[in-house]
Length: 128
Image (tube, rainbow, N blue to C red):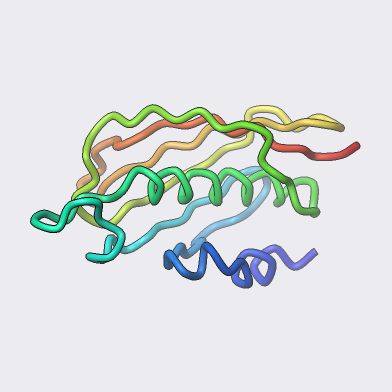
């Protein structure tokens, strides 16, 4: 499976402008530029929580896809928002467990100044 092509052709990730920068051996990194239209506040640029969540979910899925080389639908994702995102967002995901049926990935989302904005754990379907 061509992982880069798979994620580059995801319409929703493309709409948001998510860019994966590293995907290899259970690890993935990506970022998103915080544009005005991704803010929940008209007066101040503050990322909508759904933007942070989608970045974490996409990077988490990519980390697992790098091991199983097939699409991995999200079963569940838990996210803790720790700080407001006022600029570009960066995410790093590492596979915690890769089983025959289910895999889990831990993701950390940071801001431009390395402030941790959110932590997440995604659960994905890896097989039957």
